Amino acid sequence: MYSGRTMQDRRDFMRKYEGYLVKVNALQTEWTAALAMPVNACIETDTRRMIARWEFSGASPETITEEQWEDYFRQALVPTFVDYASIDTAMKSLKMKTKWPEPESRMMHLQADMEAILNRFNVTDLAFKHEQRRLVGYLTKALEPMSFREVVATKLTLQEFKPLKNDAIGFCKYVVELMRGFMTWEQAAEAAARTSTSSSGRRGGGRISAAHSGG
Image (tube, rainbow, N blue to C red; front, top):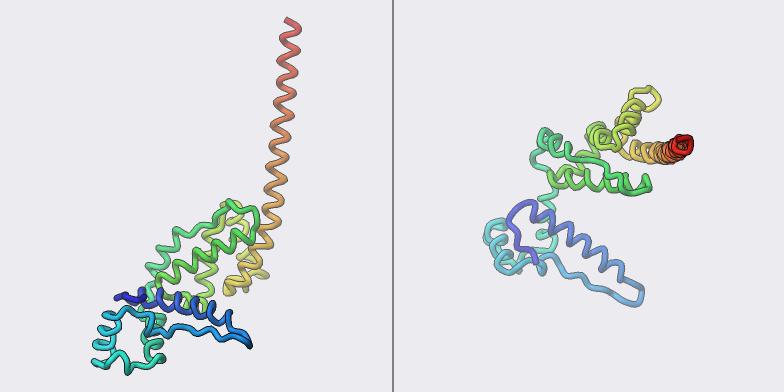
């Protein structure tokens, strides 16, 4: 039940309600009809009365239509103030997690983490419409490990890759493929290093044994 007070409360409620509708609609068949609870039935009684009083000029809650209730909550999804300085600061904490072995998993988690920050500032849709270059910048700076980030940053300076600076979706697809090759090379290099270390240890052990035998 909704009993919130802030615009963020409204956004959270509407996203949960839309998720609820998806589940209800999935149950609809030609033989059965699943009924969804209306928005006004999902609002706590005292909160519904207060909203009706202050937001609908003292109207009785029963006279407010479902469309009006939905509009009330969707108002919170419209950005009223965009503070990119604060968003830029928040994005400094964005980092790709490398614990997953698949590049797709790493990228999906990075995308989700970035969207969580954008959602916090209520600018996700706005940023995707008007700030593609900024989004690519956030993603590039968040790439890990550093050696891979440097490879991508260098690629973006080349003429053939410059269009990706203004295409966050295309950028992510390209990075996933580049990461796949990078991870294969990285794993091969690590395996070669382990083999080299193991061989050196065996050779060193042999020399020590020979020295002891000579003594």
